[in-house]
Image 1 (cartoon, rainbow, N blue to C red):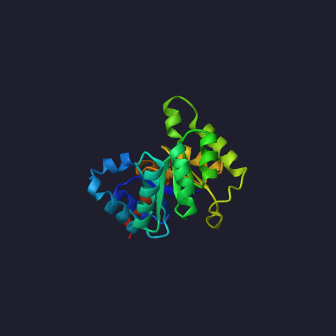
Image 2: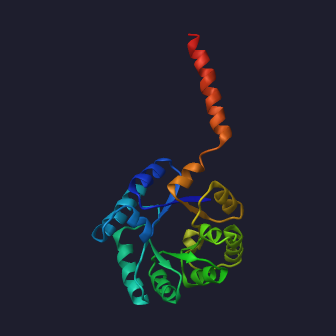
Image 3: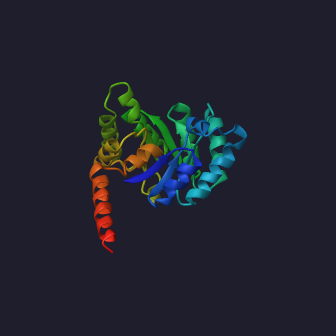
Length: 228
């Protein structure tokens, strides 16, 4: 499984990139707003993210256009900012049409706000490079987001959609991931990617037995050094 970080915070992205295991970045308007960024600075901010992670790491930048024509125009512009920008579009009829055009031009699309198998299949068929089913938001309404993710993984893996074959085909980004447990289950069912906020990513490093082991090592080494 690949790890993406779900944030627009430059410091968090720098830290995650320094770990050597970051394979991508996903952003959205809400995440950018949390940084306090201005509209005039949005494009420069996306370019900074691309520079931090390097040209081979995809960075999803979301279009806020509401029409197919607007999504195509904005998608082309966003993709022109840096070679690793992936255009993020919300699933709808307009975005499917825009995705077909953008994909035919070699522009990668991350189709987001996926909440059903048919949505995921339509996005993949239209030419999306990534489909992003949301897990945590199902849990928010007392439904199983992981069960829904499992259905999407099985359905997508049943077919060869013919797009992005040179990059391995369409990939499933497990989005709205909030815990190491959800990361584990997504990996076990074969989801390609987990996009995780920094707080949850740090939790993936933690385990009480690891903490206890480090404490024991430190205590034993203190005994050794005390005897010098």
